[in-house]
Image (cartoon, rainbow, N blue to C red; front, top):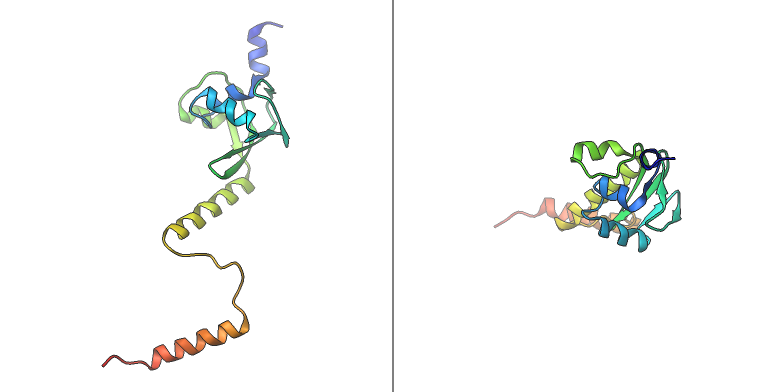
Length: 139
């Protein structure tokens, strides 16, 4: 097998992550893989592990986890448009990431998502406050 044939059938995971623009440098990609931030088919791997088309990667960056499927291989970093063709993000991953983004935006605006619905007593208290607010008139 020649080196050209090998390059098209498998690529090191750290090189692929760099080429797909998940990390700015190969050393950052290597550190992420070493640190357990990247899993291949649900398992922790080493940076030299080869990636094949069709495998699933979980990439944890900045507190969010992306689940992606490898669609093409590349050892060279190219434009973002080409890098996006190397993988496909799962619909569940997109939904989870968007929900987390919306929650962070609300928290930045000072709103907090309640952990549970209000109890019956809390609902009565709110109704009383609304009724008082409707009766109140400024002098």
